[in-house]
Length: 161
Ligand code: 4NP
Image 1 (cartoon, rainbow, N blue to C red):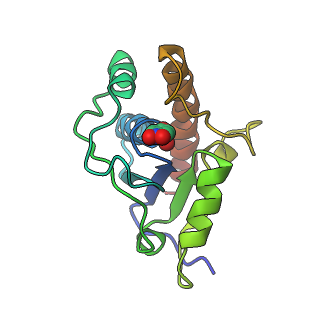
Image 2: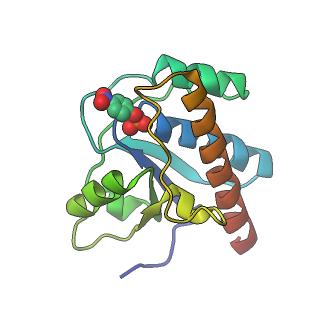
Image 3: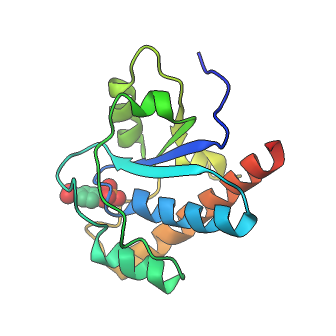
């Protein structure tokens, strides 16, 4: 069962590699929360371990920079069972991430687990498409999606204090 959320709220963004979608989501959220003057604990992780210790994909860094956000200092890590105790909300990019996360959740999980786009009006149930095997346009689309998620988060936590 979900317990009361932490103050400040703690949100973890989750994707497969933690080098494209979730670091972009973390960067967009950091910028949006800072602009709104709301304190929050924000982090990102991947379900896979291939890129652990690496910075975000160069194309993701370039897209974030184009939008005025530096994600170059982020460092990929893998989701752990402990994340389900530390975070209020774990936001998965797609259904596969959601399923893999559910399999790792401990019995005393506190975090609410859902898709990132479940927070965005009229986008519930949609995935943030994986841009890894595509071109730069895909990263621009990813930013647009995760920026909408960041705005929805600010609205959610800004209004509830
Ligand atoms: P992400 O993208 O899950 O958005 O970080 C990917 C990164 C790496 C791989 C796949 C997706 N990969 O297969 O290595």
